[in-house]
Length: 120
Image (cartoon, rainbow, N blue to C red):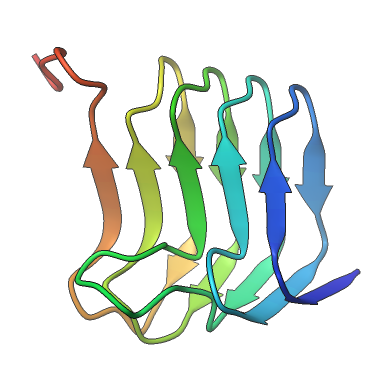
């Protein structure tokens, strides 16, 4: 599949997104507004983000909940503040074996849910 111009907005559970080329979107390539048990695997992401502010959207953005999600074996590239952003998500999410290039700030950003203390 080839996604362009809008990217994907997902609120579902137990979805699999693999073997896609996702590029040239104004916001995130894939934006998860919650959802559990999703797998993002073997995709190519390039030049997806909102550059109007310091943080904007990453190529892959999880926000507002979500547990047991997996982001693995993706090629992620393009200029921007970060490539993967986990913003206020839940438990047991896995990010592994991704090739990440072309970042300005950080390849991976984790912002814990409000009121939690990460990495204790």
